[in-house]
Image (cartoon, rainbow, N blue to C red; front, side, top):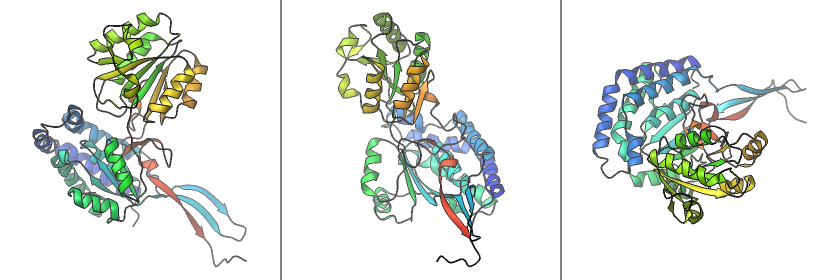
Length: 397
């Protein structure tokens, strides 16, 4: 059964109201998770925590999706065949989507909102560290669906153990059409090796900024620091490449290192750049280049040219986001076209790679692969297409 846009929106309106009305219960459930999170990495605790601000963010994401166009049924093309048939290509949902994610209860709302409005059914497999929070939020989903006489199987939470999850992945016991893994490389690689179901990879960050020789350096400093304003997110900044031709390079490296340390960051770099400032710790930077830090650490490196910067980013980054700071439009354009990332910035922070910031409202993932979509994934990307042909008995000679 196809749900009308009105029916979908009524569900979402009720969901937003329920999240607001039950905010105290959501936060209380989250406190149970936090009490059990003693051994959890601090960055994961940051993702796990739900407070009034995060609840308001959930409500806002639902409200934003409410205002977006429903993609389901949209006609992409139409052709009147000479024999009288009408040939149409229409947008249709994938069908049944499984998202596997760690630590972030807000994904339980944002992922399901995008999937639901685009006509999909979604199975949610959250991490055990967020179990109480996720169950509380899914209960509100169930209430909103029931209030509108919509089947509750549109949003299901898989409160299952590891062995059952492994069986689901290996045997596709739930007839899935798409799996979206959101988590570390270990999780993603395991799912890749375990299932034959198509994947949409929400991969790692390890994002780079290149400070060009013609950069507005004060702007560059602001963008670097903003890139580390949250450490646990995939759009955070990890690597800073500085052009060797930057005027007063040593002085500028010292200035940036001092600002970074003042900001609470641990600045590391190779022996060459560490000589510029006693606030930079010398490390084997080559071994750290591929690593996504998700911490206070930030790596500085001097690069020979724009071409070398592009090559370095394409070799080591996660394909998520990359930034160039430059007053030279031609260099910036070359950077943006040649860097192989989902989002490429000129004179702006990588922290904007986010469905809400790009006007989608909620996002289900940030895809770092090229097929079938790249970058923040909202309801307009959780669809595929199908050909609809209407005739009156035509046969082909």
